[in-house]
Structure formats: C-alpha cells, structure tokens
Image (cartoon, rainbow, N blue to C red; front, side, top):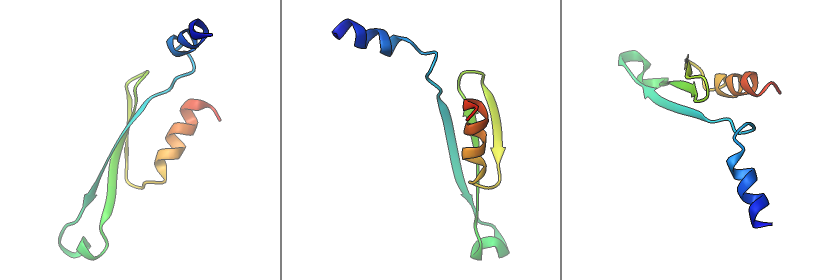
Amino acid sequence: MAGQHAEEVNDTSDIHSFIVRIWLEETGLEARHPDWHGQITYVRSGERHYIKNLSEIPEFIRAHLKI
C-alpha cells in the first residue's frame, strides 16, 4: 500500500500547477474604484497571461485542464 501511494505521488501526468500573482492598482481618480490586475502562469508550458479582471483566472485554468 505504501508503494502504491509513492507511485501515485511520482506520477505527475495528472498534476497541473499554476502561479497566480495579483495586485491592486490605485491611481488618481481611480482610487475610489481600484482595479485588480495580475498574471497567471501555467507552470508546465511556461505560458503567461496578464489579466485585467479576476474572472479571467478560472477561464485560463479551465482552458488548460480541458474541462
């Protein structure tokens, strides 16, 4: 049983990793309505996508998981 668990952990074909960075941008008149911006990286391919709306994060992930 322990061997089976180690096998599952070592099989990375079903593992997908993403790095998400988000930041708040507040400037001048926009201070009343701050905008969240960010970047998401798909670790496996290195593909990066800059986002202007947080709702883009799940869209990017879904596209890479093909769900």
